[in-house]
Length: 147
Image 1: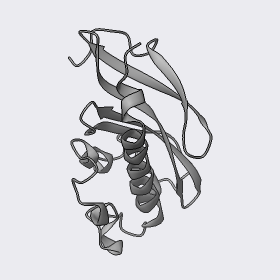
Image 2: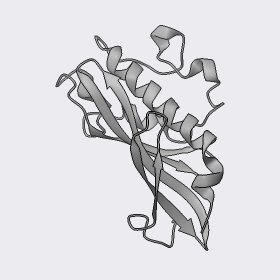
Image 3: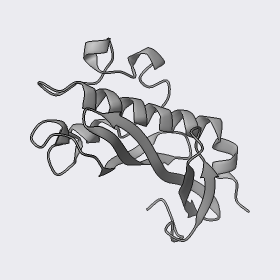
């Protein structure tokens, strides 16, 4: 409902802060960018994790999904939507909601639960999502610009 274009083909290329090439998928409605989706990266207990982060034009999270990870089955893999609803808690959040200091797991004084026996994976996930929101904020004008 937020787009009348095909976001899979309406893309722009950018570089993230680590110099990785990113394809940014843009949702447009009536010729205006209403949301974007792009990959964000984190480190978990078993190594690198990759997510797709969707953000609306106001900087609120539309959704987050795991694209790849090597986390321990039955423990760290709870970041996957098919394993539970933990990853769904980020929808609707933005920079400032929660406050910056609360973008952490509860063990670190933040808002987000960690899994029993697993803190590193949720910590890396929260950090990856937060870095994606920081990227959006830093590049908002370019992300929302319609050619």
